[in-house]
Length: 84
Image (cartoon, rainbow, N blue to C red; front, side, top):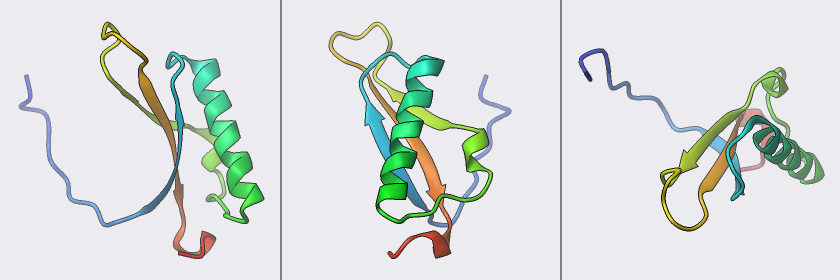
C-alpha cells in the first residue's frame, strides 16, 4: 500500500497559518484563507504572487472523533515578503 510513497527532504520555509474549527469544506476553507490574507495585508506581509489561485490546508482529528476538529490554512511566504 505504501510502496509508492517517498520521503523528500525540503529546506525550511516561512509559512503563515490560520486556524479554524468548522468543517473542512470548500466555503469554510476559502473563508479562512481570505481571513489569513487580510491579516497578512494588515501586517504588511506580502504573500507570493499567484498564491491566491490555490489553497493549502490541513485537517487534524478524525471526522468521527468527539469534539471539534481542527483545521489550518497555510500560505508560504517568500524570503523577501516578511521581516523575519
